[in-house]
Length: 65
Image (cartoon, rainbow, N blue to C red; front, side, top):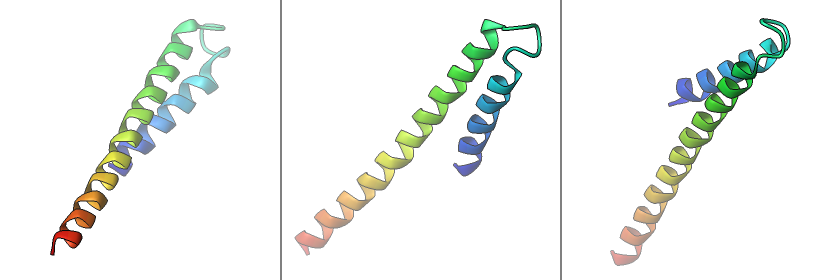
């Protein structure tokens, strides 16, 4: 999943760096950057909840043994 994080981050940066240079202050570049930032946030939340879920499962299993 690391490559998804990296791709989203790098693409968001690309659009932010391009804002004001290509086609002037193009609102589409900002919207695209926001899109990739939201995707990055989503995938980051998924990783955190997956890690928390597996830790909780391990803790519950360890207590029941």
